[in-house]
Image (cartoon, rainbow, N blue to C red; front, top):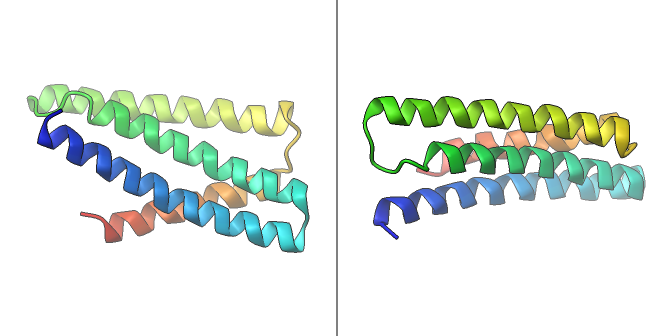
Length: 123
């Protein structure tokens, strides 16, 4: 494994960890104040966003060191796959799994805040 690929994988894992910690924090708050079902929904929302970030990072960094055209294609493909994943996962969570929408969205928001924290913190 090349040094660039290893560094990119570590970066994606750091973002996933930040997102998971923020979502877990919201899930604990939901557990205390709203119950187990709300905590499950919040945790599911965080997992949805974290998996979307993993898909995006996997696709973005797949080419490694490559020409700009190849990197741009990876960026667009990663963003498209992430949005497809988010749409299908949110639909499934609310319509099929019966998760509460508000805690699910709170978990998603918490994971997104974890991403923003990662953007400010990780280099």
